[in-house]
Length: 137
Image (cartoon, rainbow, N blue to C red; front, side, top):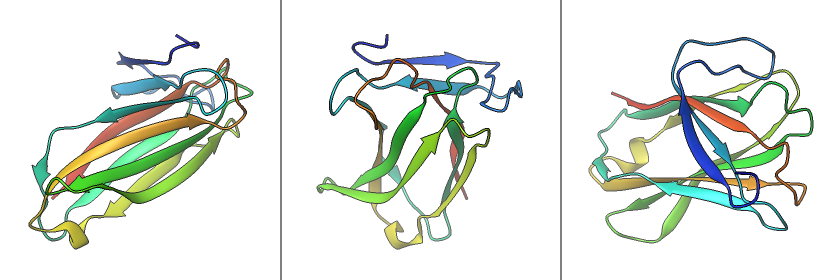
């Protein structure tokens, strides 16, 4: 849904280089218009020292005008949202491997929030994937 935004799942994502993977991926499309975005919050998990957030992100294949900002945010122990980072993704033939150290959150109950925003005020070509997101212990 390029107007309201949408989230779907696929078992065979075709990444922006044309490579077809066999790992499940979450497909996100932000809402259309100025400031268009989509956001999702995940259940809390207690973080341990040495934990890392890992994922592969990028635009899907056949999305030549894709231009997005992916933000990894969190809420610790019920507090306000904080940022762990933001990554700009464009249709450049490459994807990004995220590897974020979570050690500073050790012992805290953390809810992760993914936010995806369009960067060109339209979402017609903004098809984003996040593949294999997980916490590495």
